[in-house]
Image 1 (cartoon, rainbow, N blue to C red):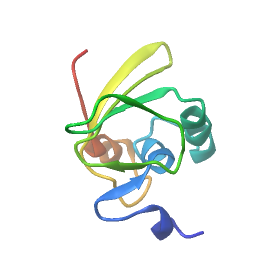
Image 2: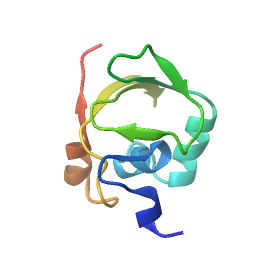
Image 3: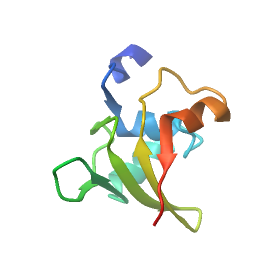
Length: 99
């Protein structure tokens, strides 16, 4: 399956985004984390929900909260990205939020 199948201009799969944003070393690790229901998603106008499928679409403006490596991560998705690039490029995919 090509990378294009996982990318659209306005949304992308949760596992692909987490991998591109460099929260996980491999996409399969990201998918397993999502499968475990360990990520909360807040989308404008909707209550918090748990993401439990790696194929769940993420869009710019979505807010994700999850614990990884002993710390709580609270980020707003800014872009889906087109590839898994260097860390500087990955940091442009999200904005860290307080609390």
